[in-house]
Image (cartoon, rainbow, N blue to C red):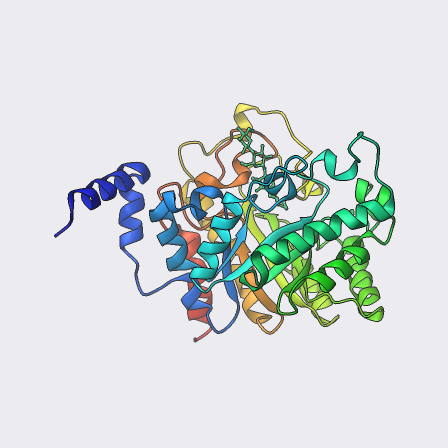
Length: 381
Ligand code: G3I
């Protein structure tokens, strides 16, 4: 017998998520992404607060059913955890880590050092004057120490540095580079290696990793770190791709190139943009935006069958490749859970209706979901 309180609680969850979400959660069939690829690689999702929070209990159930790895979409970025000097806001990050570790998932912290979502104060002293190299290195060390003390072994891997290179393989012009210098990535990994528990895997993460220039630069960077005895365990290929770009051959070339350097390959932020006007050169540069026009938002009322098929075929081809290279690929993480919560609804044009993931706006599995499961079944497993 349910108590009145429990009944009210369930009614709230039901109203909050809508009928279809709850039915989708209840129909936990024997198939799931994590069970299907259990012997091959982790299958993960980036969690926004709606999915990591206790308030999103039904959403959490979907995550628990399908995924065995989680990444923090925004809650562990510097601006989220520590927007002003001395102002620590850790509730969302704590909730994310607790959820993932309580479930025994492979938990990925995102991200220690990035040029975006890092507040200006990080690079300045209390008078607003730029820090020098030594001072900024100390500040970096403080951030890693804090993360290591707070989350320790409850985090399995950290994205140590995100997006330090441009597609042509040169270092991006950031405050990190300006103040610390060209060895900023090396210094970041040295600090992470020193401060994090040895079980925590250290990852370099970037988009556009199938571009030749960036691939070569990252290969060279991994070699250089290893030559110097600095630990790096994995390379994250974000995977913000479209229906046509990059080709399977380009993706394969990068997986093989990184694996050849003796690091795990993580597909760390997978989604497939189905909307027009995505210039491939944008990669996932959040600073680049386009004008909205009616013609570049064509699937407001849902994705037509023909496009569902194209998306399913694209996901099947990509997962076929990941499966082929399952000895090299440690994890495949989607950048979000459902289409309704994907960042691609707001980039590179704000407020569009994108359909980039495996679960639709009603939390239902899409044809692309089935196509991904079929990759494994088709392989005779
Ligand atoms: O939380 C505020 C909210 O209070 C405010 O009202 C609203 C107004 O715009 O903004 C909200 O913050 C937004 C935040 O996402 C949370 O939704 C930020 O504006 C928005 O810029 C931020 O975007 C995130 C983006 O990184 C920022 O750089 C996306 O959610 C997140 O998916 C995206 O993730 C990045 C990875 O970290 C690195 N790789 C590329 C990937 C996609 O850009």
